[in-house]
Length: 270
Image 1 (cartoon, rainbow, N blue to C red):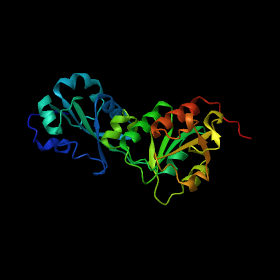
Image 2: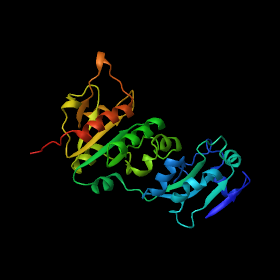
Image 3: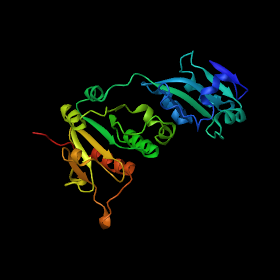
Image 4: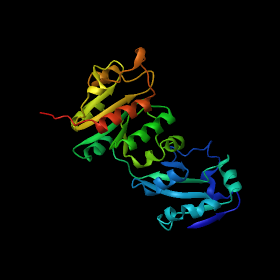
């Protein structure tokens, strides 16, 4: 449904106006996607719906094959670059935006229950930085994580910047948010997962860790880390560092741990 937009004040593109100031996260379950790679992943993501697309006229041919897979009722708004920039409120070098909606999400228990017998899960606690959130989802996709769980204090992985940093992985990696009253460790162990809590004081060195059949890697925010009560009920795992250095960016930590677990021999449980 190609529709030409010639006026930045056209009400049909009101949702795209002043993108930086009017990010759609939290508004009727909508979110904003930006750039070709992210847009293609949105269109292909089974758990997401493309509500509409706004694209510069010169980019339309390049996206034709992806746009052709959209339902015929999905509006695709096309504008000259200067009109597009005026709508967005800044020079949109990528030349394309889309509004998406997440289909009915699963709760954390239901998401874990539907995973295969051998599964790898990433659990995030207190991650409030959108760059880190995007990097964590990017690592999750790169190393074959089956699902991501977020505690109630984590920021939204469908924030525009988080989606962009994740290169669209936040749209394609299944995730669920825990309720404040949920017992994370009980939820994981009840579904047969071994909880692995990353901490500089971990008694288990990462290099010595064999992959459990169902593994849950738990990461906390840089600085405060994970709550002690949570670590006491999990297997604490450490990444050795030189010169007593004890801090890594949380996304870097995730990349190291997930790479190890994706290539480590699976533990043979009795």
